[in-house]
Length: 231
Ligand SMILES: O=C([O-])CC(=O)C(=O)O
Ligand SMILES: [Mg+2]
Image (cartoon, rainbow, N blue to C red; front, side):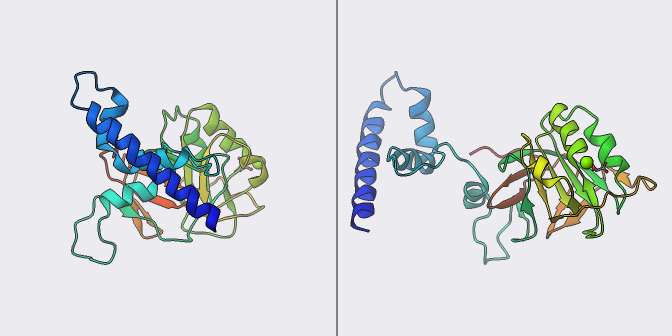
């Protein structure tokens, strides 16, 4: 306890002195991009200072769901405050991919216990998109497996979010792909009923329209609308 208190105090002192250096040099014409980003990003600069401590191994440049909600989801209890983001219900998804932090514009599939359109979508160039599959929350079969997930990786999809199940979860966990789903299930889905592409889908307390930006990490999932957010 005592040592961690000292460590924190040292990190705070480093943060204070680095902010003084940056503040005094920011008036000069030689301000670097780092200094510019410091003034725009005090929270990230603070994290960077904390990270100078080798005991803290977290990512100093993180801009994840917590930082986005701090800025764009101002008062969680005041329902009259306008929101720029929707936040998915807690505990709805589990992370299954080898990547847990991903973002991109959504492409959507709506289907029920059938996955031909999931295959069709993942066979297209992903260009960093996130495939959002509303499988109606069925717990009776899997809408994604290792073959389809492998196609997603090869075709450049950033991630897949499934309101339903997947299989081959051990293999998917080794892939360079973000995947959120409800649960694993060993049974594959039918191939008879295609379902629908690029329609609005609603689950986990959020509505995703095609083109909406998805931000996902281990803390949750945000839907940011058609405009991409940068911190
Ligand atoms: O084929 C399916 O429907 C799911 C599957 O197992 C895979 O993608 O490997
Ligand atoms: Mg399989």
